[in-house]
Image (cartoon, rainbow, N blue to C red; front, side, top):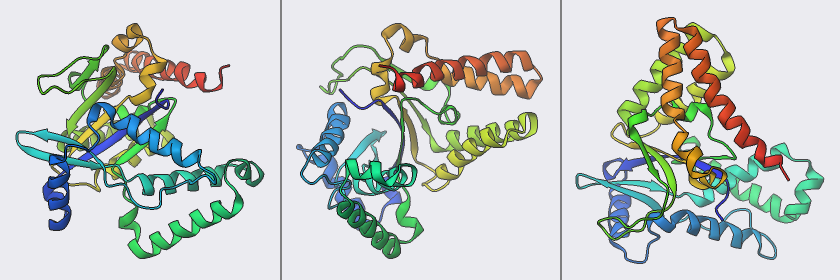
Amino acid sequence: MLPYAAYLRVYEPLAAFSPSERASWESYAEARDRPRRAGALHAEHGEAVARLLGVPPAPAPAHESPNAYLRRVENVLYVCPWQSRLRSWLAFSRFRGTTPARLVERFVPTSIAEQTADDFDRFKRRSGSAGLRTHIRTSTWHVPASWFVPFDGNERWLVLHGDRTSSGATTTRNLIYVTSMGHARRRTARALQIIRRQVGDAGVAGEVEDVARWLEEFHPHSLVELDYGGIVHLMDDEKLQADQSVAELAAALTGLETGQEELAFAMYQRVILRWRSIQLLESAN
């Protein structure tokens, strides 16, 4: 079973990478033994579980992952590196910062935790702030409302049962949205403008602004993807089919913009209540 997590990903075109990286990703795309999309999440999860179940556990891999998610559109290859080591460092830093020290020791011995932190500090000094840019964001047990903003309801791709595509790849049960970086940035900028003008909620505006700033870090011709990942296992087929969170949030923003406050409130509440009920499952027994 996959972890109950959703993912916001950016796929950059090869032009965004250095010549050496470009050649490496082109070779990777042709490799027959690389993880395919249908099994990539399982491969990522398997690597993480193996590290954490080891003796002693390893909060982060010793080397950066050579793997990536790939998309090819009109003969253009788009790459979203896994960056497993960097993402593990960032996640472990958040874990240490929000968990009492005695509880951290139950998961990772102090010596291992300190070594992991030292390795990360050396990496940050060597690479600077640019080295901390991740192509993948992760959210457990829910999809943040701000993640729906960059997309349009018509960009929804739902698969309820595994199927075989024309290329021979096997799809898995999932819900995905994909859009261009240009569309994602324009929609996010519009949403931020409406929220600041009509709502004035610093918290909501801050979450959308965070997504907007993150998108600005990438190549303007990139692709942006929202993947429900393992969260689909918290929803039956009927709930997945009925989930129109992107369209509902867009309707809420349009309602605010046009003065239809009741419509805006109703649409926003549908999104918030849907995901609050799912997020509550984290503490269910």
